[in-house]
Length: 284
Image 1 (tube, rainbow, N blue to C red):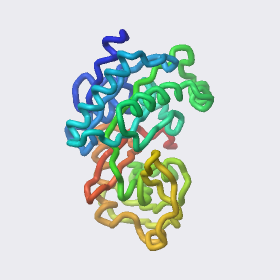
Image 2 (image 1 turned 120 degrees about the horizontal axis):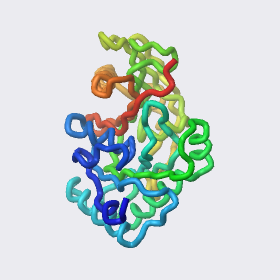
Image 3 (image 1 turned 180 degrees about the vertical axis):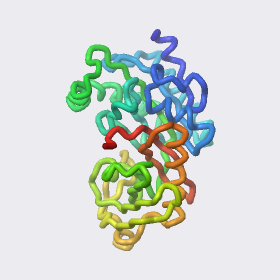
Image 4 (image 1 turned 180 degrees about the horizontal axis):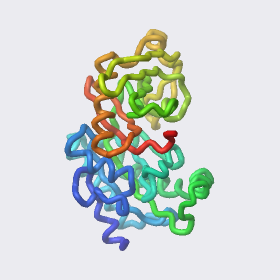
């Protein structure tokens, strides 16, 4: 891809952002869903070699797009999440969950450019390289796109599976949730709440309230894990209505994608947002 082509950012929901080969699996999946599901606005830098140093022209293009994202969000300098979106990421055979860098609570054009560069470099980390080797994926020409997306300041975050990844039961939906941003769940730093529902009826068949001693929150310098207020640690982070709303979203997305999915979502101000959707790669 030429630098001129790479400098044309792809916006979630636009047709030119739907191709995994251009913007990677993560961004393409969200882009295809953005017209029908509550996906926060964002743009993707098309895939480039992970070792590439951003040129002044590309850096300027990212900053211009960040300003446009501010216009779309109605905020001069929106707070964003900056995530990798490799061209072989979030597919049926490999998810790369946790292998590449993610930067949350990023604000300002220069800070976004820096986070994009660090995301690209993370594709060459020891962890990502080892994962590629274990999956028999290409090691010689690693290309990575980067997604810049409005950050949802979540009251509650959840990860939902439209099939039970523990038992392999495809007739169940499993949800884990915690207060604050979702990094405490995906990073495994907390015992979250657990909910299991029957997929067809959405009847709640299991509810285990985790201790939730820690939660991820925004700070002036990014994010941090802090002690969860005592009054929130032992009460459900989701109401039964919210559990069913998330389960309904997961089931709908499974039908859309055509296979069981693993989704990340957040609730802020009573509104549910879809942050990520990928095939489950671990079902037995």
